[in-house]
Length: 244
Length: 238
Image (cartoon, rainbow over all chains, first blue to last red; front, top):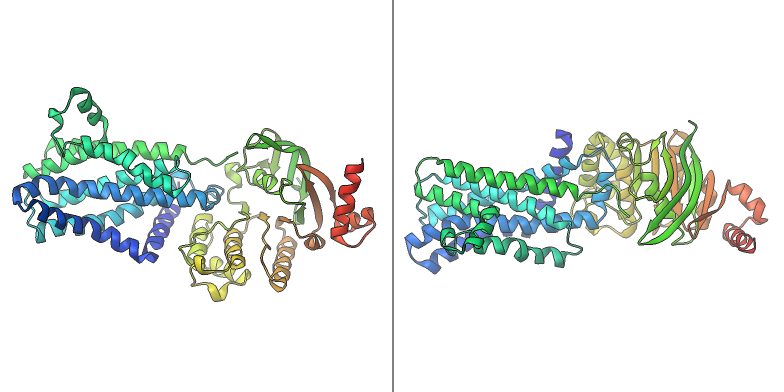
């Protein structure tokens, strides 16, 4: 592993993003616009606090999953991945490079969306907005790690995009946002117990209900980071230096 | 060891079909070796074996005294694939700077490599906006970084005009004179004359391995296209 190569990779991914103005605009603005839309759909402060806050964590996960799975698929199909793997670059350099780049992009996205929710739309939480940004970035990095892993199973961009509903929507349906998890059937709750988005949403709900840092929030963040590490580890296994 | 590459009894299957059938050959250091033959003959597969990205069924591939693909070779071997493997959403300079960082070369080396392949004017241009030949050269520039001891170039001159092609072959010769070993594939027979040695591959087997002059003599013709046909007819008759 080399910090120079990792950082060069992060910089390269960010440079690629910066050339694509439309993607940057979509990344930064879409979650905020969705929050605005949501606020008017509910037209009620309490409901917005209950649903809008967890969604601040869900949006970055979904968006980063999509962006990364397509970016990594391109890397695989254009031959650049194979080329990089013939160089001294370590697989972790590549994964962490992507991680750092998309975490930075996610931080910007989360800051704008959170700022919009609090300042413009009157989102009200007991805990601080800073923690909301932290959880949102952690979710974005998780989405990135899942996207990296899933890209190995897609042969085309069509397939990569289809994996989003397959991987992310089941988590969304069972994460406790539509109906609280303890009201679900036992087997369904058990499934939701092993899906990382459940903890992301719970963590944000903790921030909403408590003014100080709770141990549940710390555990939730730990689970999200742990799931990220596992997905990155499995992703590294899919980066083969030799192929048939 | 004097040989830069030593391939022994190499068997490779791709997609369930055997494409190299027990191939043996060697490449001397500081030379330009041409890998020639019709499309589908196994040139790219052999090059992938030299770089160590190809799964091998049996046989051995030694490169610079190490097994092909071993970690110690990753900064000593440069590889350019047939379809340009650079980032189309980055400029030529950004691509070169990135690969320079990965290969431990300086950013001034990146500038030099771009000039070497004749892309100085296009330096700030996105790769996506380049012509096919320019893209291929951008890909080549990224492989020159880090001064590799062995350069594996898969069809580097496809789609280039004669002037550029001449310039590139001039560059290959001067790299070889400086001690770099080059393995260059091509299906353009007149490029064979620029090589120190020619490996002629057809249907996964080596049908000739000699200097261009010796091959011309053996085939009794100066015309390289004709030489290739004669050699194939000789193999088929035998």
